Amino acid sequence: MSRIGKLAIPVPDGVTVNVADDVVHVKGPKGELKQETAHHVAVRVEDGKVVVERTGNEKVHRAAHGLTRTLVNNMVEGVSKGFRKSLEIQGVGYRASKAGEKINLTLGLSHPVSYDPPKGVTLTVEGTTKIHVEGIDKQKVGQVAAEIRDLRPPEPYKGKGIRYEGEYVRKKLGKAGKAAKS
Image (cartoon, rainbow, N blue to C red):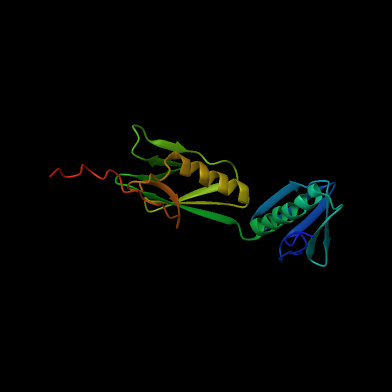
């Protein structure tokens, strides 16, 4: 039995969960999400909780059990609280600014970079060196944060670039220099 899959998902106030034809619809104060589930699992709503059960005991059934429970839990959490990832920009002259829905980034390249987020994800800029990615879909929020980080990942010598908030970048020493001749 999957240790994650067997946990029931509590449904908070203001959130409704409907299951019909292997599709889970979750509606809450922040928005609405739907997710198609694998036919290896059965999703039920009972007593204000969502229960995910698998239909067999084969490897595919066991794998889909925990995954489906986590996806439904992320949907419930997303429509009630939302998700947020923060990015930090480090480097002399590296900065971000907001222009409408887009953000404009100056990252030491020969040209400024503009990033337009997909629908359902909002970008906010705090100061000139912090970017916050927010939305109700955890997968989209993580993907957008990864795409922004990929524009200029942190380099290992000075640590310049875009990194997740709190991410540790191991720095290399660089050139050791010539040994002194005696």
